[in-house]
Length: 303
Image 1 (cartoon, rainbow, N blue to C red):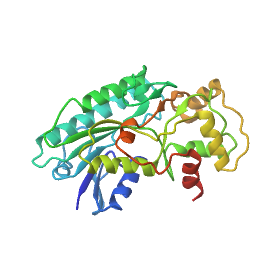
Image 2: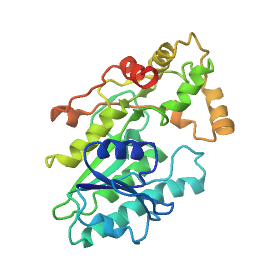
Image 3: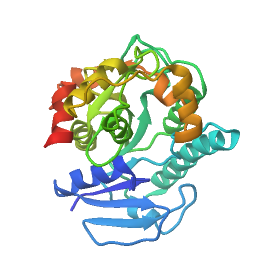
Image 4: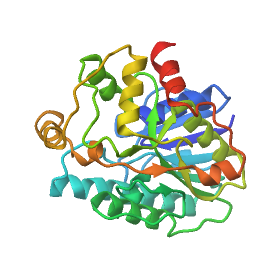
């Protein structure tokens, strides 16, 4: 049985990918800070995200390593949180590079789950070659990507997927917006002109499977859908799918207050956006199942 190792894979995206891979005949090992448990085809093995341990033996002979590790950015950007956001990403990349380099039977691919936040806050169309933005999130992404590509491995491809706003059932980025809309609070956020580069979770998982299995995939790819929309359009479509009528707008000052006081998160997560397209996937013939936002939301919410 082919095996894929998912460091930091106990979150929404990692667990969804684990299910997707298992359904296609893979064994999946999730590296997590909790205690080891489970049996094949899904096992949880303990690691701390920065040092060697018993988990090292899982890397040798694996088909791929897909790294999801990193402190959540859904927090207030205090100096302490900023340092943990950056260091958790650099530490995991560093120790995985070291283990792969010393492995007798290294994986065919080392895949890193990255972020479209590297493009900053922009309404310009961004393919993989677009200029980077400015700010804390951009700096983290740049240092993260530099660390990932700083080491090469014989026989192990390196692929980094800059992931967009992933839409799926039972959690993820959609869940808080869905709750707001259900409470008649799903109006336009801020100016509403900021773009959301969304992707259905099934398409994202198929992207992961593609780069795991196809040897020609190497380097950086935007892992998002081909049809980004503005926040205003996104919220309007979400309300329509939920059969909710008009909702009041959330002006920028109110969003900032709610983010800090209620959500305990940085308001930039809601007030900034980017208009990204998956150019390299499209040029390689990748086929999306969900290119229409309303169709994607209908499948997630009503089916």
